[in-house]
Image 1 (tube, rainbow, N blue to C red):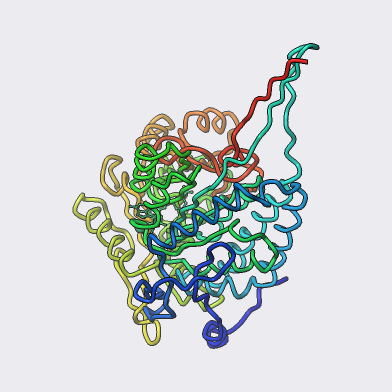
Image 2 (image 1 turned 90 degrees about the vertical axis):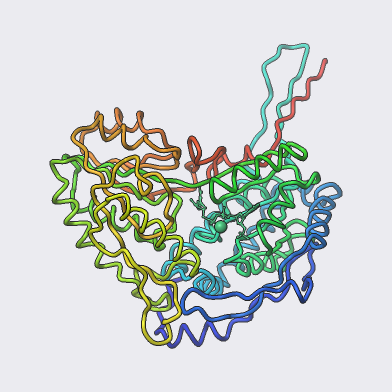
Length: 502
Ligand code: NAP
Ligand code: MG
């Protein structure tokens, strides 16, 4: 299937024709929740109210956890033959494909992602993730230990139980899929709390699960406040494991909730301030430059992995900085419903104010603003949108606020270094350790430096490349555990030893 190219007017008309979910999904049923708890869904495209969202309260939280508990304890889901779970999940994937344009448009409305990226990148990742883990359901074998002729020792994996999934809004479908898909594939049941900005695409995914025949209570979705529903899940004694993607600050709170309750397993994918090191022998300096710009402006900089600290060797600094400034002009913020838009709005007006506060602090710290640095109010129907200029600072001191704090917006910080050692020192001078980039054609330099960078992923002569077979996650305060790959299954299973005397 190819991207269904449309004009802005056609996308607008299509978006207006969509039927948005009006209720949560709990125990296989649609539940409207309390009238007084509904909140407006505002699109950052133009600031208009699109519909209202049913917000869960403590009552719905209890119902959803009880439903997931019952679906786990009484089945059938965890006791189904894995190939049966696989078939049901593949039927669900087929529905996601059928509804691809609808889901992409809802996503674009919810958080302002350009429709071409929503359809081409995020929906592809969503579908691939669910398909990959569905296929894995019947392909993980257990182990028998070599304990000698008189004994038999089995090492088996069992689903951990009820999993709470709490996710952010920047890549909401993909990041949720990276958790929900492996959890369901191994037989867990799930209560998902999506981010406040992207609640209804998550509900729509759960509606499609029901349509595919996935049993009641297996996937429950609770739009709601982090401080109520997220915290409630974190403290709930009937939740066995909690998988979170979001900020380091909230991740820390989840560890506290677990400590205060039942020591549920807590898996955190948190923030980043990823370094991107360009050395003079980069194999293709123009590709390094274009990728550095794309990396920070793609998704309007709202990427946990964004290469937000460009660390450039002094011998190529002038050329790289000039190149990045030229490339930044290609990311003029535009309408997410325009197929050619390369950068949409930020996800909300309050996010825009936060980005501005980071920029103001960088100016006060003495960093040099080279381009951008302010909000943009587009004209006409887009006037109320949360648009922001692509922004680049140079002469950023490694200890300054801009070099240390995640902006989560289209703001690049550039630091010039004199040699490899200084590059590594600056790269590792952060509490985070999610990802890094390294540009050099020398194979020895690649290995020497990649080993010294404290990050969960090091991209060499590329950035944001990936595959479901490779794990994703952070060192240090970027979190623990890994999404994607077979390693993700560790979050959703317990190992059991059964030791038998023959
Ligand atoms: P956030 O504020 O931490 O929110 C993430 C989720 O936690 C949301 O569902 C939120 O609910 C909930 N939450 C907020 N306050 C809570 C509380 N006190 N107790 C329990 N739950 C609470 O993060 P965000 O602003 O949505 O997303 C941006 C962050 O996510 C960035 O730091 C980014 O680096 C990180 N991120 C990490 C990765 C990764 O894989 N490592 C990927 C993408 C993003 P509400 O929406 O209702 O507030
Ligand atoms: Mg937040």
